[in-house]
Length: 246
Image 1 (spheres, rainbow, N blue to C red):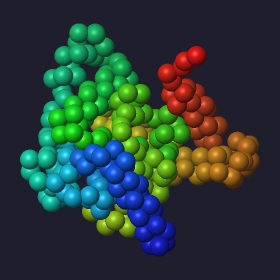
Image 2: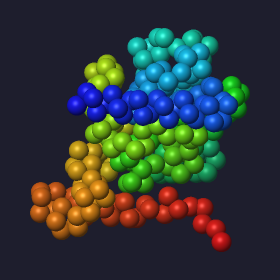
Image 3: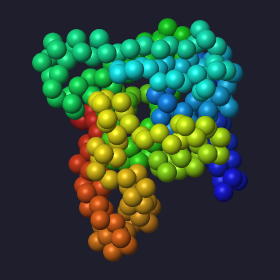
């Protein structure tokens, strides 16, 4: 198992280093929530480049997370902790959408994107995305929000694979055990919003896309949500195709 994770790590760090060489850009800006995806991405960046080239941003709405354990080796001048609450609330009030969680959540994700790319411009850097394969296939992201980046180091890994890699990288259990959330509204969690677990999702996605099994055959293996999961994939597939053009 460790050999497999070592291979994953080497592949990703080589990928990141190659991007720096090809673009001639050394600095990288990462949005760090303290969730498993952004935390794993940070650890991979640390293995790929000098710490002085990593810029970490924590863009919170409710209250800031204590991420000092993750950022203690990052230069203090490279760390940004910014509240997006006023920006998001003011815009939502202007658009009269404060009661619509989905629209407000999209605005919050896009505000974060604006800040990340602005800091990347300030520091002549690239924005590191934190999307995993499960979220990508499900379309569980905001277009031009958390789906926007210059490169994606873990998008080829299912969520459950990210957890395995995190353990190999010896990420503190506090962060591994956190419930996945985009932090878009109070008590919001990914699995509650989706209506199924990442474990079941990854099993279904693997059987459907990698093993090429039909939904009926997947259901016979014990998945009660196979049809629901694949429907979400198909319904959101347009997110991977836009913008449409001639």
